[in-house]
Image (cartoon, rainbow, N blue to C red; front, side, top):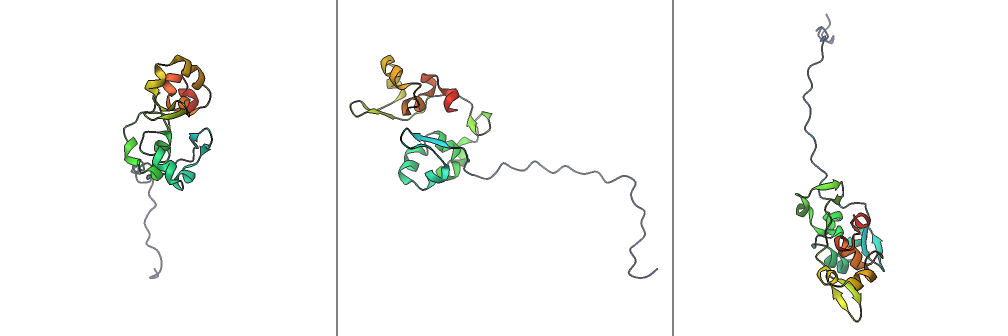
Length: 148
């Protein structure tokens, strides 16, 4: 046989067992492509938009908001959401009021969901109309399916 000929070994009858490779870790800290609600005048925006708006970033990041969840890289909140139970990938499963203030009007000013909970007339005005109060008080307003 010539020195360049391949060695003659019989082909295996059964392929060797394949060891399954481990499931890869989730994607590294990243921002979602889902739009986030800013307010009634700004509407829905992207995480890229938020990353370039320091005022809105300071206002929305770090308060367990949709922006804080969906824009984890931008908000620096990647480790804040590790133990959340998800109903749908990308959205929290629990219906809850956000612990943030919303602007009612120039006379009333900034208020919380606790304030709104004790004022049925204001609930009639502010809940269910795509307002900042409806967004912040989604459990109180019964609008979790809309916002989540």
